[in-house]
Length: 187
Image 1 (cartoon, helix red, strand yellow):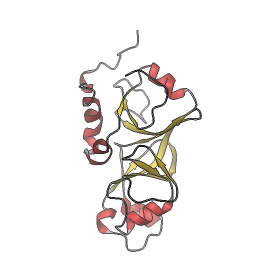
Image 2: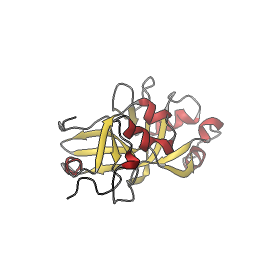
Image 3: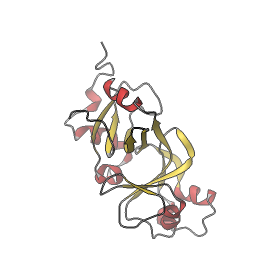
Image 4: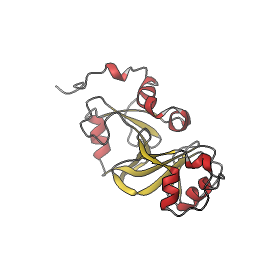
């Protein structure tokens, strides 16, 4: 696939040689990419925190037990105190960005409250922090072979087990990423 500028709704798959520990073996959904840079959410790094812990920090009273048991993800190294929720369409919230017709990103508290009551979106992923790129930085990293990219699917974003996401996303390109040399592409 040619690199035609913007990577919104693409999954970035970290190449095996990724030196930055924040992104080693990660899959990141690019939610916004334009002239001002890019914003992505890492979708395969569960934290040692469940929604119960997050609900507690947010003073949610009597949250839904099923929701409470779900993991919170490390969405990226920027703004780790901020919550980001990826979810399916169907319910609209105050501050949402349409990533694709299947995936929305919501940055407002109302989505967390809806999830806590069990009335949230059918499918959702709650992350703390995000990955951010300055204008041109992501394009540069793509040219430097830091990432593979594939179109995002709700299946990988919401359903695939976290530990399988890196390999599964690469497999959609027909690649066994575990067999790629970490030195690929750098003479």
